[in-house]
Image (cartoon, rainbow, N blue to C red; front, top):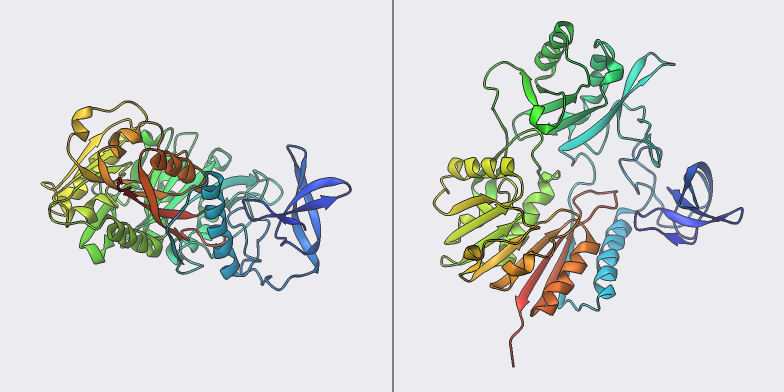
Amino acid sequence: VLGQTEDGYGFGTAVGRQCVVKGALPGEVVCARVLGKRKGQILAITETVQNAVDDRTEPFCAVFPRCGGCNNQQWEYREQLKFKERWVRRELSRHQLRCESFLPTQHGSTTRYRRRARLGVRWIDKVGEVYVGFRETFGSYVVDMNRCPALVPGLAELIGPLRDLITRMSTPKRIPQVEVVAGDKARALVLRHLDPLTVSDLNLLSAFSNSYDVWVYGQSGGYETVTRHFPPGDPDAKLTYELANDSVSIEFGPTDFIQVNSEINHLLIGAVLKELDLGREDRVIDLFCGIGNFSLPAARTAKSVLGLEISSTAVEQARRNAERNDLSRTAKFLASDLYRPIDNELTKTDYKMLLDPPRSGAGPEFTRFAHRANRVVYVSCNPTTFADDAAVLDRIGFQLERVQVFDMFPHTNHVEIVGSFGRLELS
């Protein structure tokens, strides 16, 4: 094994071909099982290790490396953290960007951290039942599993019972996936079904909801079709999580975007607020604000917060969260396509700017907001687009002062970043 891909997989050569091998580390010699080919490369997973390096450790999950849910359980965790920081540094150096300070990487629990997951469902003819779990590495098949050590216990324990439930339903072959999500006080599942649910199906779901104390939703089409079936009561009831340090309570629906790692989310919010350095007279604009995860804690201190978000559904939920926390006068939310030209009225006064865009980056229009900002705090889940946008900020007069990596998804190639940008002083 000669090196590593951005996913943390090993790469090397075999029979004169380039190979990408999950579960292998640089410097090792491994025997691997070929799973397929992609872009001229052989794709494989490690079966035995003939020459192990010192950084190798024993995976904690029986279905690793076949399961695609984790990338690098075989690698000492401290080395995974270094790898993620090197990745961020490498992307910044691609633009010749200097950072005044790289703060220590923040991390938390390495198992039982994940409070949301989208699980595949697949009927297996030879065993006469369904598998429920993550997709296989380099493939579309669903892994045979009964628990997942990456999920919070309240979700991990549902996988086995979900297999039994879906196997007994009228058309198990027509149920392609189930989403599971946990709030602080309740948990929910969203069952994607391609055929209408029968009376028998609804009876099974009702019994499951009662037995496992879980909210059950159905989804027959797009996200607009998500409907709560059980338990009976308020169909618009929401899950919640608390941000105790900021005296904020967040409500969310089962398909709303939330940060999946509660422990790291608290650290992330703390870092963002520290970098914003808010005073009582500060105004904040929060781009890609979602349901208010950062906006509302900021509104506890700032004079005003304006949250902008593409999803009108998320904006409605953010407004309800502002009301829930008695912050409606301070925190305002508007639906806006942030990838299109924006209303100049929004950028007439000075402010501090916060943004947490999707993996694709902030897009060209975010500079219209940045031009009037005196500070920018950028939260990113993609080192490549973070570096691209950091280079844009550099060109319009900002200095990248601090960067900090947060390990939101341990044992995967995913990384969360907080970058803090200050205005360059003109000499």
